[in-house]
Image 1: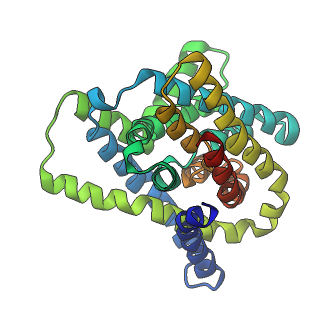
Image 2: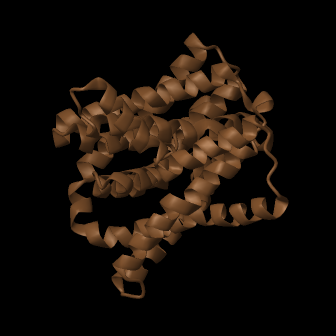
Image 3: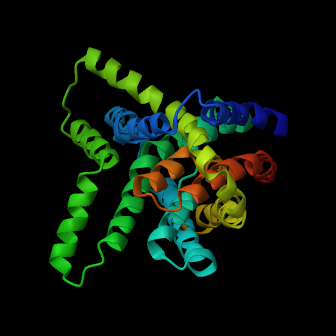
Length: 313
C-alpha cells in the first residue's frame, strides 16, 4: 500500500522540484514565479472553483451528515492550528491563521481521490466527490472570513463589518465561489466554448501553484529548516487529529455509514494541499511555514495514510 500511495504523491514532488531547480539555476526568475503565483490565485484557481461549483448537482451530492462529520472535524483542527500557532510559536493571531488553514485544508482532490480509489475502489468515490464539492468553498470562506476579521480589528462594529465584507467579496477566490453558486442556483446556461476555455484555465491552477511553490522555496530555504517544529505540529493535527475526530463524529454523533466514514477518514488524513500555501501567500503571512508544511506533511502522509487505511479496513 505504501508503494501504491507513493506513486500518487511522487508527481506532486516532481512538479515542486521543477519549480525549485528552475528558479535555483535561474531558468526562471523570482519575479516570474511571483507572477505565476498571482496567476494561479487570481485567475486559474478561481476558474477551477467556479467550474466545479457550477457543475454541481446539489440534489445528488448533498449529504448533510457526511458533510457535518467532515467539516466540523476540519473546523476543530483549524481552531487547534490557530491556537497552537499562537501560543506555542508566533504569539500573533494574524500570522497564526495560515497555520490553522494548513490544518484545515487537506489535499482532497490531488491526493484524496486517487488514494481512496487505490484503497477502496472506484465505487467508494461517491462520498469523496460530496466532500470535494464543498471543500474549497468552505475552507476559503472560513479562512478568509477569520483572516479579515483579524486584520480589520476595529472598535466600531458596523464599519468593521463593512470592511470585512468588502475584503471578502473583492477576493478573486471568493468571487469564483460566489459566481459558481449563483450560476448554478439560478440555472444560468454558459456556452460550451466558454466552459471549455474556463476548464483549460482551471486545469493550469494546481500544477502552476505547485511549480510556484517550488520556486518560492528558493527564497525560504534557510527559514524552512527553522519551520520544522511548526510543520510537525501541523502534521500532528492534520494527519492524526483530523482523522481521529472524523471517526468520533462519524460513529458517535452523526452516524454515517461505514463506507462514507472510510472515505471521510482517508480524505481527512491527507496532507495540506498547495491551497494552504496560496492562502498564506495571499496575505503574506507565515508563507515559509505553509511551504514547509505542505512538503513535510506530504512526505509523512505516505506512511500515515497507509496506517489509516489499514485501520479502517
